[in-house]
Length: 360
Ligand SMILES: [Zn+2]
Image 1 (cartoon, protein in one colour):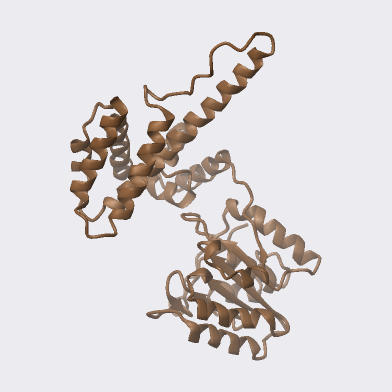
Image 2 (cartoon, helix red, strand yellow):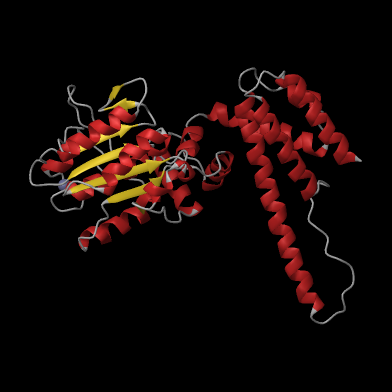
């Protein structure tokens, strides 16, 4: 059971450790390992965007240090972790650039060395020491190398929890020293259930599952972003409008100039990222449809001769190929937002080109 009652002390920081259903599968794996006493010395997992996965690391830490290993018994260790006061836990937050909850400018090799030193010091309560590096892949290569040294010769009775935003940014030598904790599947059905539950405590006007599903789609079914959207109806309206304008542009009902005019200065990259996602979703939809048609055609071929070739699915007359090209164009525009190029001019030109190509 999640701890719902927040601590009301003013002096200590409460971590407000959450227990999310999409982290359940990974935690079940940890539970099984702890029960067998084979918790790996170093665990690494990926931080998914908008899943608040930093909490997963805290849940693992709680399970290791908790007297019952259940992390829900409100024991002394659970409480100390909740209050960010456990002396055996060393937290290095590279994602939010703070050390021990105090903001610093840049996390580097010195911070990693400091952690290493502390890991060698005696632990308290006859419990292991745990270092949690949140966003470990954001460390520089020298800092990662310093960490590698510790992982190669770890002090006794210590654990390392490493979360990363991008696994490909981790030194391969580190990857070979850690055990990866994988996020299990999380169905859309369970997501909707969770969202509905969250909203039932906040909204005075209940939303139907279909309404929630529609908003979640706008957020690519990422739980935290879906929830944030659901809590701001204005934003939902704005995004729905934006999506409709983009769909009209694709079908030719809206001009490239009109679409380019909707881009807010400085926000181009974010908006382009959303257009990329819409396009990806459409590609995925058409691709799935095309595959189904192929399968049907193959079935027919069993008793008929090969007649005409299979037609690829289109969306309101827009082909899969055109959507792929649009996706490339949008990606290229996203890259340009980082440069000094006049983005608005480039947007209008590239999108006009795409529309022209498509209608030919
Ligand atoms: Zn406990």
